[in-house]
Image (cartoon, rainbow, N blue to C red; front, side, top):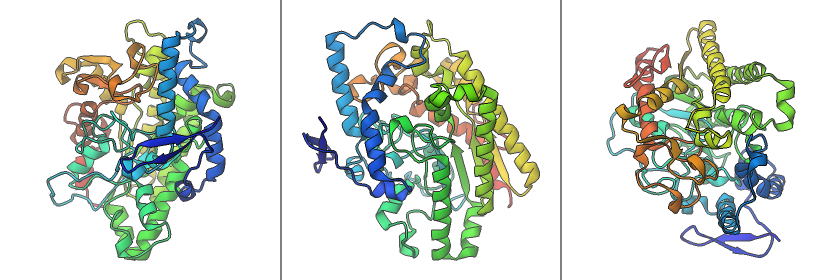
Length: 457
């Protein structure tokens, strides 16, 4: 039996027993065949939830007893709620992703901030896609400036929001929102207002590899985001002229934060037997080479200032603490060691790129280092728990994802983790302050963002 839905004026879903109908405009914008993508989403939906509950590679999978009737009923209800929230209906009405800018309006330090990434940087892209990787429902956003869900995977702000504020810029809107409002082929000054100070292309579940995260439905991969950046350049060039657009891109900051999903939703799950074909170091080399190509593509369209974020300690996330049976909250060393190796390759690649292209400014920021500093010094930062998610179910809050306000703790600021994978607003603020100036611990090499924007091109 299949279900369709409609959306009322409050953005709530109403369902009826009939076929699923999904607006294909968003998928057209990212070059996907919408019918095919939606069929894939429908086919995989039951399996997706089971993957969260019974990870195929989990050492505990065969040890788990069948859920009780009461738990089965609760999980079924949560699955239905999550499925309805995954459908791209009335995204703008239900959870506006264009947020109000910071109240102060200082002179911007750079013309614009452009963002490429995954759920660590998504501000609402996935609100317009048929995917389970969405944060446009409560309790997400409850501590945000507007106290409403926007598509950010946190209780409040994410690092790019704090960095936009530091740069004197408004919060950066998602590319799909701008494209759906004006049309991808629209040109002229009136149609670029929403992107003149930056655009956010980041998409939750997106990875360096196109297939990473596909189990959750539609997403915008790194390759597709690079195409969107080039489309933006062409639109701006048609409206402003080639010289003005070149100058805009040269003086603007590009923030890149992507790669976790290539491990979480691909390598660690051994999708398509990838572990038989690539040892961890070989897989990391593949990812780093793809990242270098992406940075070179940005360089080719005159991007010169790049903040390149390393991966966080994925093995410390509540999902993996639960999935791998951590007894006392110990991080999963195997996962973290693979991530550390990737980060090392990313940092080496960025330094070599600067050596080869001396006019480029790439600052590699070690998210792992900054996060471990928080975990090891939680008292100094005011955190009560460093293992349990504020919002989730099961041990460490890592067995089932955050889908209801009732699942969330009362004070997210006392937690490092908001949900099974993502940090709280409090952690995002600390990491952003480190990216900006190394306020708490040095994360960025060779320079932090504050120094970068002062450098002459």
